[in-house]
Length: 455
Image 1 (cartoon, one colour):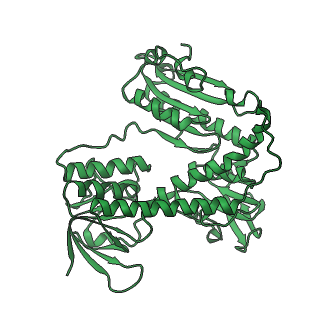
Image 2: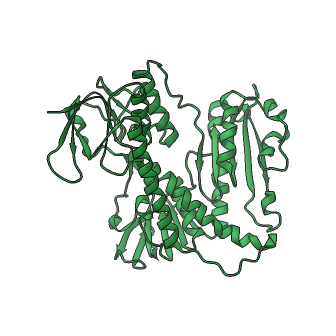
Image 3: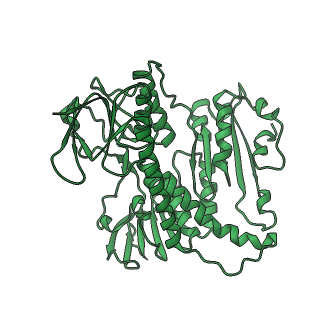
């Protein structure tokens, strides 16, 4: 006999956890089904461990600059095995913490992989084997997230996906990174900072598609200056060799052969629909995603979806807000919808890029080239005055010429994400260039340039 719940959540990632706990706080009986560790991509093999590796790799530059500030450090080296082990230990701690949060919230965690039997029944195959457990839910929320994809080339199985890097004991001396998106750029910076020789293959003519082109070019120039070899208009045709480090060869479409110890395939992610048996519930799929309306509803009454599985804006805070909005609307009787129109984003490359609002290209498309004014500042930050080291920071405001409203705010440099997070509040409130101008500067700081740019 099936156990009955008000809500069954498939997937204990950011969106699923947020929805489950919020629904339970309103008195709903909730079960959350997860066949992996609790926390999802962000906590287990994404944002959190990645950012820790970014911090770890950044010490190379900090230690190199120390002498200019009077510090004698002597010979230093990074023990990659220690860094990776410490990152995994922190992930384990967070996994246990999230399990505890579910228990405290009164949400039942059902270990295993869920599969629809019909629109109200889920069969959970336990990871330890045995007969599937049947769950009946008045409502079901699909929050299973996405997974990295391998390109369809010979030998793709020899390459790593981003998930795999966190499980390594150490990195090889040379790695080929395939991709131009934020995952590729972030890991290229991490590996480079940890002493790995990195070649990055980019299919197109620039990095970080969708971000402001000038900002992405600033990131590329700084990455190359740090020693990363970026090859534009290059794609892998095949990977050959053995899985043992140092024995792989990447053959590009032009026939060039690049020997390396490992290949990171950072060529995109897709919603993880495998094994859900959506047909049994009648849930429609559009391409590789589950389409939903503004209230997270699928085409089947009582079945909802949030987060990366809907392939709208695939960011952790967006999934969290979608999950909470669902619970507020359905169980809290406080109807609300998520505003996807203004979402700040960041790339934890080295240097960091962060952005909110329209890029220069998007603003021109909307308002015309004569309809916008671009204000920018480029300079060496004070932190680099004594080392006399680049890269320079870039700060950029995109302004509607007619209304003087700030349409976009972009930054490349240290702490860009922290600064843009605050700028996002102003942009969301419709701030004008005059509003920025009359804000007193906090001196000396990098962020003050946003309020001192000349008209």
